[in-house]
Image 1 (cartoon, rainbow, N blue to C red):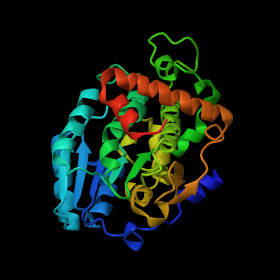
Image 2: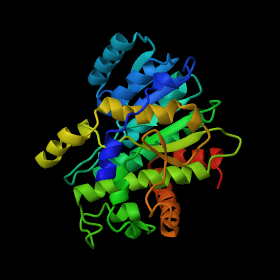
Image 3: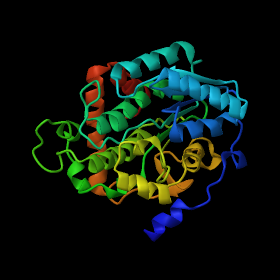
Image 4: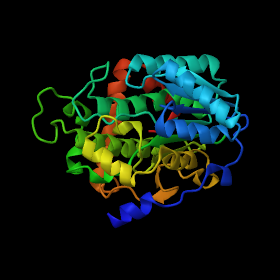
Length: 331
């Protein structure tokens, strides 16, 4: 707890103190109309990007965010695109729109959109929401945007994970070839498969770290794509809206503001020292060691199985995913 509190109150650097200009570069931030995504967008807008695309589920809220960012930063290169990563069709439509209107390359993709659902709920495509959004939707978008990232000279993919991945209970039970399917059963066979909101969110964040490491290992050496996961710390954010009163009171006492937490995301996206450190986990604007499970032999086995199952699941609903993997990644 002492270490947690010390880290929560650490002073984190502002992007303006270290970041180069984003002139001529295209940046996408998902879930950018509120919370961490919105504050990250504000930081990056001050770096004069060529295009800053707020990819959001609600077009009206996204347009309001665009106006506020333009007014507060003076940037006129901010725009809103509709994207719901819980929906396979929305992800495909977004990628197809970018293919036509994105300019051919993508310099930075920040996958910030996510949920922390304490109750059993499903995405439009039938997946338990924490897994369907935080892992499958995030992975789907990354796969579809990969060809555009690989066209940029020094691209970055940033996946917002969380320190809660350290607290996944019995993570060794994730080491199975049917992990996603087992967590989506209507009638779970055991306690691990059964729904527990906190545990399920923690599992989804562990998946973020494992999947990003798997992707990083498959990036061809000819590409400078840097793939990272980042923990923004415990923040007052929209993810707390469905949580217990006890947790919200605790958050009011110790949580970071979303502005402070967003500095970690901006750091992962633009800090010069991060370039080339692909596959790493970042916390407090520096490289950190992920959980013991992630770096264990069982973690490596789970990483490989999760990659294969994710590719199988997504390939059945979007044939472009296996084609992109075969064309652009190494085995």
